[in-house]
Structure formats: structure tokens, C-alpha cells
Length: 137
Image (cartoon, rainbow, N blue to C red; front, top):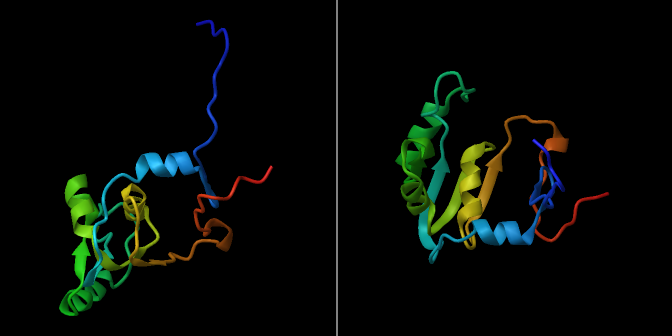
């Protein structure tokens, strides 16, 4: 194969600190809707395959959260539209740092209070994605 001129686009996301506003706008198209007071969602990883790292005692934590009125969302068991519907309008979203949190990128806004619980990753890998920051040269 012969390539006359390669075209390489600018990165839309830099892990650990920058998200291009155009990329955020292209992804963030699902309506979040009005916040529903008292709607609390736990993003669970308990239904993931056994080969994936699980959290010790997660079933007990989920049982207590469910008893306290939290919705336990096992994203991998639902279609994408049902995942978004389960999250939309939540006042509070909590989960371990994992891929289920990527769902939040698909909303137009996320006015919920979101807590991301660390899995003990090195501090340099835990940084917010900020649409307004440019990557450092």
C-alpha cells in the first residue's frame, strides 16, 4: 500500500487530564433530565465475569445499600439505553473506579453528586478529566 499523505487527527482525550470540548460535546448527547431527590445509584461490578477483579465483601455492601433505598446498577447486564435510563435523574452516583463510569460521558450534563471510590491505583493515574485544559507539551 502507498500512502500519499497521512492525516492524523488531534487527540480527543489525554488520559489523566484533558478532554477536547468537541469530543465531550459529541459524546454528551443523552438528556440527564431533572434531578430526582432521593434517587441514589451504586455502579456495581459484581456481575462482571470471574476473571475480572472483584471487591471483597461487595455483595454485603450492595445488600446494605439496597436496604437503604439505593438502586444497584449492574451496567453490563443492561442495554445501553437501559443503563442511561437507570442513571438519568440520579441525585447521587457512587461506584468504584472502573469502566461503568464512562456512562457519565454520554449525558448532556451530570448535576448529580458523583463519588468515585479508588481501587488503590497510584495517585498519578487518578486525575479528573477537565474539558478546558490543554495537554502539556
